[in-house]
Length: 304
Image 1: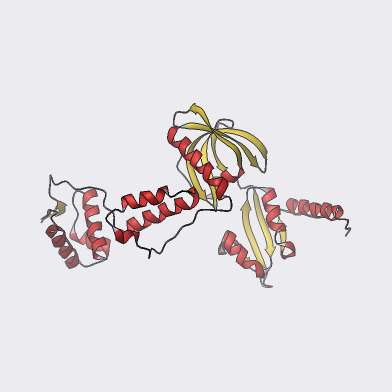
Image 2: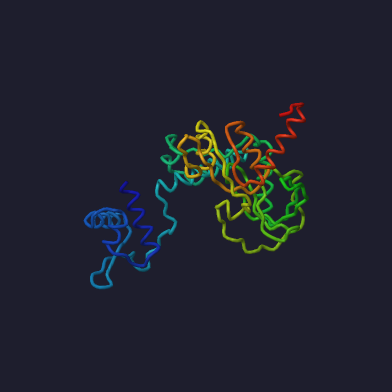
């Protein structure tokens, strides 16, 4: 859209002292003649632009002219509003809808019902999740410690952390913070937290490490796994791990290869396939899984 291109040109001019017409033409994938017409239109709108010729020439906003540096296109605004709507889906309130109405006042077009992006961050745990998120948000803003009972595959423990960041990733909510018990940065899954409370003690902010969304950089991946999966389960592998996680064999079976952080999660995942999956590697886990099946058979009174 032309209006978005005009706003884009203004955004560049606000961030750079001077640019050339060929640079803008390449940036917006239009001709130099189109850029020249755009510059004329911006000047007609009352924003004084100055063009200079020569080696150091270019286009610039007239010196001394003041312009708000926060310039958003309509697509920018739609993206912001989609994100705000998604927060209401998990907060259990309409406070973000109220914010949407504030920032879009006088711009009815950005609130139109034909928005093609809808993000729902809610879950089956919405009734218990929303109060946790609200409490953690408040603790982050006011720099208050939080404590909770945490339940993980390695056991349960009482934790006290300095909360810094709420993260929605891998279809779940997490809080990243500095754990006082472990004396290091940790990620905690909100659904595994019980008896969550905000402490009266405050903390001095530490420098938060850069956020890295890669799972391998957050969790220690201990087990390199290979498994043969039935071809009618291809949809599950694609959905859960992606099409690059397996190689189709000559007999149609799918050779799955991936890393797992936790043995119990691996066993639960393999068992969920029933007879349609066979763990190949690591061999020691294959043997342990066979022993577990043997004990299960005895428990149900079956001998093989």
